[in-house]
Image 1 (tube, rainbow, N blue to C red):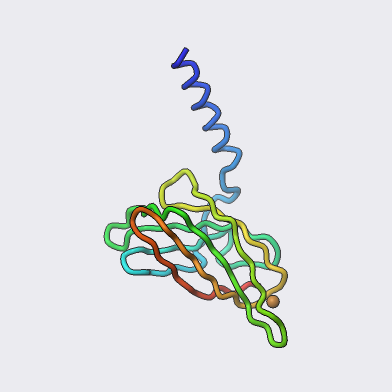
Image 2 (spheres, rainbow, N blue to C red):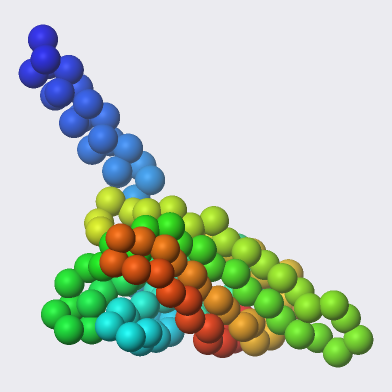
Length: 137
Ligand SMILES: [Cu+2]
C-alpha cells in the first residue's frame, strides 16, 4: 500500500512537472551579475524583456565551482524613473524551481524603457542583493 501511494505521488509529481515546466526550450541570458562568491543569471525566452508579460529564470551558482547555490527566499523588483512622474514600480513573484538554485518568475511591464532591477535573496548560504539595469523593448 505504501509503495502504491509512493508510486501515485511520484506519478503526480512527474505530471505536475510536465504541466508547470517552463514553456520554452532554451534559456537566453539577459544579464549576469557576480556578488561575492555567487553568480546570478537572469534568463528568459528571449535575451531581452519586452512590454507586457515576461517569464524569467534566476539562477544562482557558485563562482568557485559553478555548483547551484540555494538562495532561499528570492525576490525581484524593478523601477523606472520617468520625467514628471513618480517612478514606475513592478515586482515579480519568484518561486523555486525543481532544480536547486533555480527560480521562476513572471513580471509585467506597462511600457518600454530601462528598468533598475533589484534581486534580493536570503538563504542558508547567506543573504545578499544586487542591482542592475535591463532594457524593456
Ligand atoms: Cu515607464
